Image 1: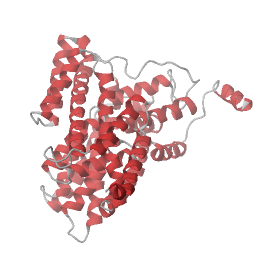
Image 2: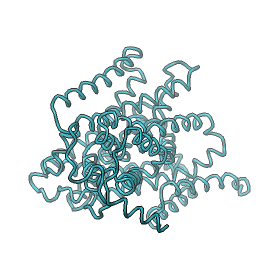
Image 3: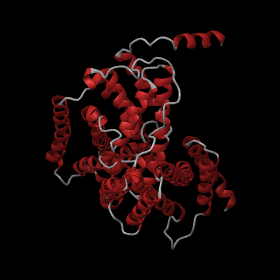
Image 4: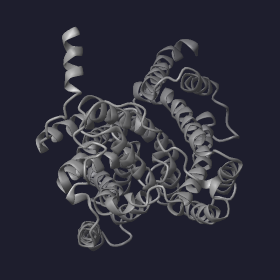
Length: 457
């Protein structure tokens, strides 16, 4: 142990050796399999590995990259991986980092979606899902509290959150319209009362020095990370080809109203509205996938969120589950090709959800980074984040209604589910238990209930 400590002390005095593309490839591949715990856990893993342990990037540069990703719509942890991969190894480095961050979760969720549809009605599986659903309700409520405690710093932002909740809960205002109105109010408020909309502190100041880093505070910006109009236009053109080519293929093959074409269009819009993380876009996905397109039921949406919480990768990967069930139910290839329809639809949903995230980093990284800290750009974001808190609270209410009153208010109240939900809330709020243990214990409780229910009858 003494020798290990001495090695660490000596090692921090020298800058690490340059990292090859394949060294980075192995790290991003490993990260894709261990990135549990939602965005906070995934960012913590990257900080521990890249800043503290490997010292590939300094703390200040890491936080600067993270703050940039927080400004963009989309999953910030996955975008941070793309950003860091791009910073170290240019465009291919960013693409590899971002793809390996989501591919393990994509394969796992396709497998779990098939198991869910094939065996979800098996009593043992149904028992586990029964216990997990109240936990999901508690997790969404915890997300609203966590984001709210960070975002709602004054009465103006609290008011915006309350108005957003009333708009979507009572008036059924579409989520995109809420985001647009909040952004406009933020832009106006940033001029009238800038102190009410200032983004304070980001993710905290730099508190510790871990020694010289490969990309350090004083390391010059790499040539490929400097803003050039030619580079921007090239990436945008490639992005439009990648989006329009697949969309055109789907439209030509199945028509504009075909299920796969509509999935591509719907999840493109969803990708541009994920300010505030995955929980923020879930209401929009619910409104479209459940209420408008009827790709899946409300109960299946809750089950999908439960599965998404138990797999690595960003939580927005629930779109893979939504796509799989949509393909399975819409039969784009006929009734004899259910599995193929589910897999193709899952890939389509995932492709169109994550394509914009890559483009935002690879095309806009140098440009958007130069605007960081400018109130003109951050005030609308503050307002959107405040509105998102109200929208997430509405999602928690929606889940609670379907879990605790499965037959509607005219039916019976499920006291056992409510008891499991209260236990999950206590674990999350009072004892700060992680999401995975909470889901595991609640699923075990549902399974136990399945076994003892015949004895109670």
